[in-house]
Length: 148
Ligand SMILES: NC(=O)c1ccc[n+]([C@@H]2O[C@H](COP(=O)([O-])OP(=O)(O)OC[C@H]3O[C@@H](n4cnc5c(N)ncnc54)[C@H](OP(=O)(O)O)[C@@H]3O)[C@@H](O)[C@H]2O)c1
Image (cartoon, rainbow, N blue to C red; front, top):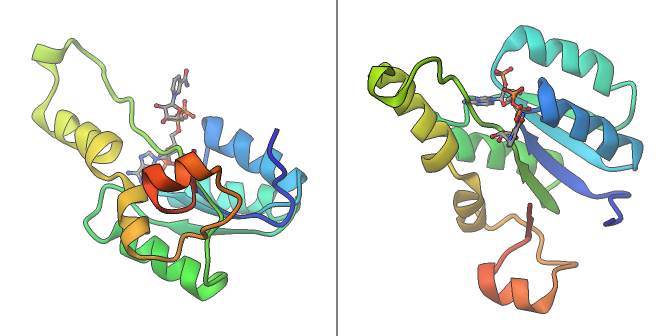
């Protein structure tokens, strides 16, 4: 189990489900978490709960939006100047029918959020991801910080 004490972590999809559970666990282990979500009401509920547990802040960003990575990068710069860990957890699973019957908008949104909006690459080029505590073979592979 990695040591998350003092780690600065961006966690997308923080407002419910696995992301919310992970945020709780990370804060309890002493990490600082910047959570990203979309729905204001759920995000506010998460803020109320998680800020009791430790160093937590939230950012309302649709990770499928064109400027999403820049917005998150800006928030990281302002808050920490550097990032240790990205937990890229946000995804949509809105399938209600078989593939042929699915609405084009749902398909498009699913592909955009789950596949195209892959912040790690953008975060890397934004060059604020910390280069530390990375096994040498992974450093060579990706060239920037920890991406889970
Ligand atoms: N649950 C499972 O059985 C399972 C199994 C295998 C893998 N996974 C993976 O684990 C991850 C989390 O799953 P989950 O079950 O916890 O999902 P979930 O309950 O549907 O939660 C998804 C989270 O992602 C956020 N999100 C979705 N689209 C977003 C967007 N465009 N911009 C910003 N945030 C967005 C949601 O925020 P909002 O409040 O804004 O909607 C929510 O916080 C996903 O990557 C999923 O593929 C889950």
